Image (cartoon, rainbow, N blue to C red; front, side, top):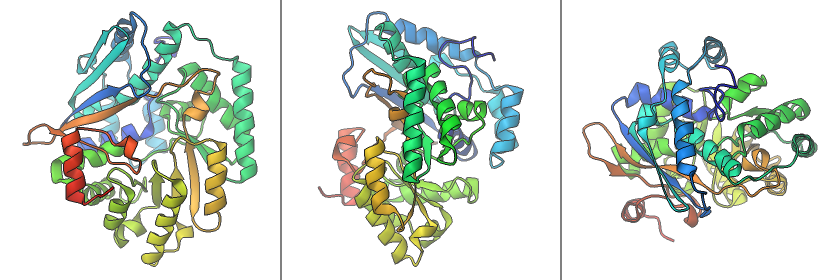
Length: 395
């Protein structure tokens, strides 16, 4: 498909890598499971008249996206841990706009997704990206020049280079637009040298010959809680991940039900098998301290492991984390909106989260996330209370 055929998404691969790796796992392990997702307008942004219609048109256009032969070949060569049968499936996959329900009342926008989990799992990231891009378009908000965007990101990646760290770009979901995102990755690739190690966006990784980066997201563990219970969610989520990937994609997400609960279940087997963990909420230095202490308690050299920090990062936060971690544990950084929406406008504070799961032979079950920041708890309040009670989380 040519990039001019649809305004917002030039490719089926214009999505975050962890959506495809999770989709692969869901197809293998949970092909009958269903899921519901809901748009959450954290920033209470006001959407202009006609927004829902424009978004619906964009969603409808996604039905035309398909994996090209070159893209399939790229995935086969770059990601050998993805089964050939999965790549054949992805070649035949088509977005079904009927899975998405969009409504608007005044300036309030409602977006809900429902269907088989292995299908609906791909909607979250592109929907958020399109909502952001349409918001700026329909409000007639102009970003700074392309030359300024390139210069800003050149300066950023060179500054990170002087800090001596590695940086990946994680900004698809809340990017200003596809055009800006492409400019950003192009600049990071051109000026980043060994500092820039890849992007979460598979299409742009292919376009700019860099590495697609990602493993799994909170929804992987949220589903496991719905199917197996809160006490088993982390351990079975990790076990199933290792069964699918056999040691590849070895960064474990730690904060679906708080880091303290995670480390209780991240035993020596998982601690040795996984290459490291990802930090996504709470104080990063406190997290690093806990992670270092955990590995030492297992008799594992923390310098042989890596923390991927990815929580709303900018240079000052990265410098602070680096100062603490250097020489104590391996580290790398995934930076999102600070790269892809630093264009002179206010980034949108929005998310799309799984709200319910329908495991096979079970009813719909509300799912929740209990991150290391109280304000980031998401989901049904009764289920949050139940999870805290079962997991003995006191605050």
